[in-house]
Length: 154
Image 1 (cartoon, rainbow, N blue to C red):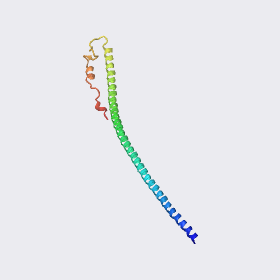
Image 2 (image 1 turned 180 degrees about the vertical axis):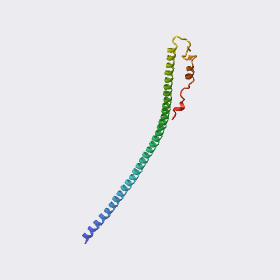
Image 3 (image 1 turned 120 degrees about the vertical axis):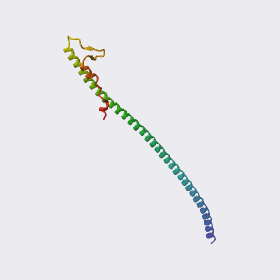
Image 4 (image 1 turned 90 degrees about the horizontal axis):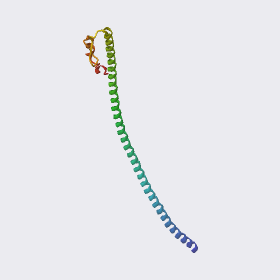
């Protein structure tokens, strides 16, 4: 029995050492687990912060792009309005050119007609600017206004 008790006491001593070592191992594993958990939490916190910063940057870019877009639209509207004003003015000027061309052609025909009928007669006097004096036709054309711009507005 002595040998059996010696064995069991040796085994008991080993079990005590073993259980102490297992507790130390368990504590070490728990400590590593806590460190890993803390590290993971810190990593997740950093990841959330990076994600929030990225979102803030995108929101800032969006605000900047919207502001720039509004400025471009404003510039485009001003330019379009300027273009439309220039086009309207060009239409008026073209109409005036056509009217003046017609009047000039009529006056040229009148002068040609009068010159042909009065080739030997010098009763018609010309002023320096080309108007015919002493002729009733002169008053018909010289007192006519140029086409009014209000007629062409739409």
